[in-house]
Structures are given as structure tokens and as C-alpha cells.
Image (cartoon, rainbow, N blue to C red; front, side, top):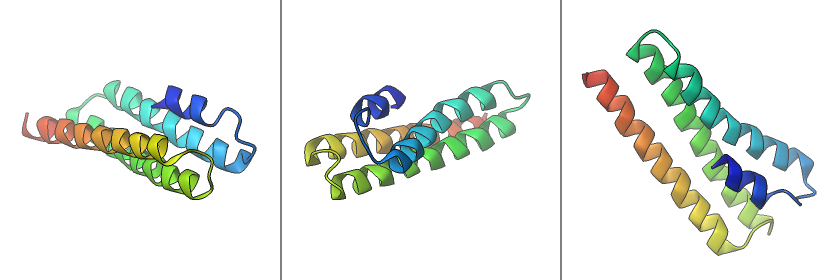
Length: 100
């Protein structure tokens, strides 16, 4: 997702928007990584939950990007779908860790 965000907004002149969506995308990866390095499944779940929230933030920002004509509808829709799949995967992994 981070690579897509960087390529989608590399030429975006709205620096505030670009910085926010990039930070949210990086947060997805960083929280998964940080949670993985924790001592327990419950801590890992907490960081996965934060990552899931950041995925939702990125998904929302793709609506804004479409509204502001930063991207075409097809790309924005595809990215939102990818964010939703990521959120679903994170949610499933969180359930697995809770049951384990």
C-alpha cells in the first residue's frame, strides 16, 4: 500500500494531503512491525488494531483524493478496495490471535 501511495501522489502539489496519506500508509506497516516485536499476542493485536485504523484513514483519504481530482475514479476505487481487503485481513488475524 505504501508503494502505491507514493506513486499515486508523487506529483501531488497538496503537500499537506500528500504528507498525511503517506504518514497513514507508513503507519500501517510500522504498527504491524512494532506489534510483531512485542512480547504477547494481546500486544500484537493492539498494534494490528492501530494498523487497521490507519488503513481506514488511507481508505477515506482516497475518497478525498477522488473528490479533489487528484486521481481518477478507477484508481481511487481500486485503492479503497485494497484498503478494505487489508482491514479485513488484519481483523481476521486479530481474531486468530485472540482465539489462539
